[in-house]
Image (cartoon, rainbow, N blue to C red; front, side):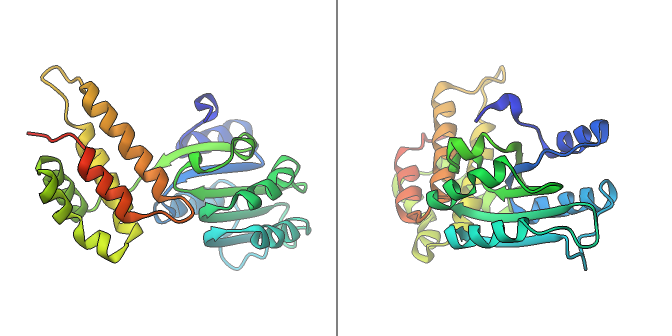
Length: 241
């Protein structure tokens, strides 16, 4: 990802307030539940664009966004606004197939006039570079890790391999992707705090952080194996304390 183009959500709002202009397509990294209130508040208070009872806003969520979904989106975006001077599309997707991404390239490059897209996904890294380059990336907005996931992560980093496998047993058995992602977020938080006396994170811990970030990316793939990802972490994560 080209970090020079990336902003956080506050930066996106500030840029609009200064210029009065929107980019035609945004990719917002993070959790929909955390992002949507901020985004909808921006629409309503800054753009004066209602998010309820408004035929010119299209909001939908997808576990997997495919070619057929892309066709529907392209059809809707080609239509003219009914009540306002612009149309807004909010697409929340965990995963977009490669075929669908390729089919969206032209639309995101040359959208209909006064049409704006806000794509919300866990990570920009799951998109093809060709599609990502057409989007203004808004960096990750994370909700605070839950209490149970933080407790599990603190325990996990101090355990031996056998105990770790036992700790993640329930998540693995249930193949619970959401809980696995929450746990990995907490683990990232815990590991990032393992600094030495002068506030430096060791090379071993930096590599562990990189691995956790990779696991989170894998978890947002087409068909992630919760078992393989978490068990690999249990086997390879350095022990703390």
